Length: 241
Image (cartoon, rainbow, N blue to C red; front, side):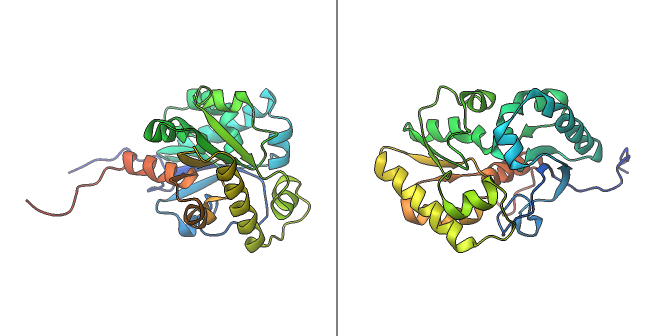
């Protein structure tokens, strides 16, 4: 007989998500759309913390509510914690030190991996190139990795809805086109790029189209979360000898 300690109201949740407050659409492939994800999730909403606030003022004062939310996720029994915005990278170390389970709040953690896999500069497509700083890269151990940054600051649909929060309605076709145009421009500017990391969690839904356009490996928060889930829940292999 196997005795489990209990103590959780809900069991079987793999990944807990620290979720910024936002109300634009999250299509399949978004970390905040659990209907499409290959692992179970639960969410702690960081009320009042928006994309705009995190990018404009990532001050230490934001840490207390974020860490409190991470501890609540840990208490719920999740096996690892991620985030709904790659710019949480600036707090990666502090959040990881505050809990006893794995923390990977930004897809940017994969930048060193992508570099060591290809031995070529890594293309980073970010929501805002002007907001991505050395401190974000230092937070995930990517400061010394050669990167080429491409922002979506000037992409009309993306920036209007996601960066400036002017409305909640979003034309997904336009966002796709803006991402593909940005990626193509980046690769034309720096053809030596060996792989691409999508900082922004709003971009994985279009990653397959991006890869078809630029023909390079594409990393994002979903590839990272899937790997963490797999390492946290090793299963017996099927097959036979």
